[in-house]
Image (cartoon, rainbow, N blue to C red; front, side):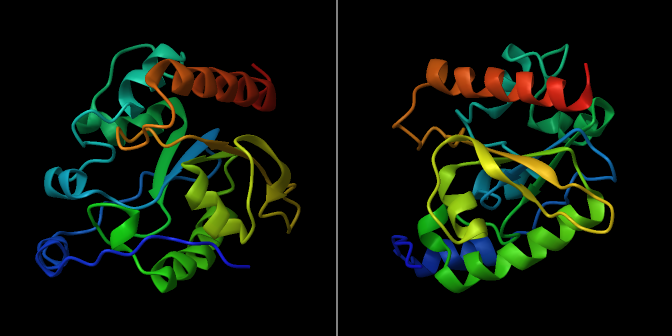
Length: 196
């Protein structure tokens, strides 16, 4: 399968990103929901927190959709575990965006992510951006709930998979109110899956 990804390697940006440390996953076994991002952005890696980029819609939408009872910021990312929500990325290396990641890096991230999901066994996995899931699954997809569960095995039925538009402000195809609609649908799915 051939998925096209733009490539614009910028040596200065690559050197800057190489000095930054990957973000720590916020994961534990049996979470209700795990959000999967493409990789840490430069701003997030510089500050050491997930979704810290200016204008990223993740944190406001998480609250507005009812996942958390208080307004959180990127500095609160480790606290999401208290709400049974985890965070990880397909690729650990920080960059300005997907165009700075090679196809090989993206494809190498898929088996590592699959292993994490198998180990931690969340009930629902949400891919924050369509391109992330398409690389992970190896096929094109529509936004929303996916027909497959993953990864099943060893007495584990597998997690439901949901794909939403990226919360990055670069994802201009969808405005914030439209993204909120996806967050609210995801909240209903998680609530149903965990029997709330």
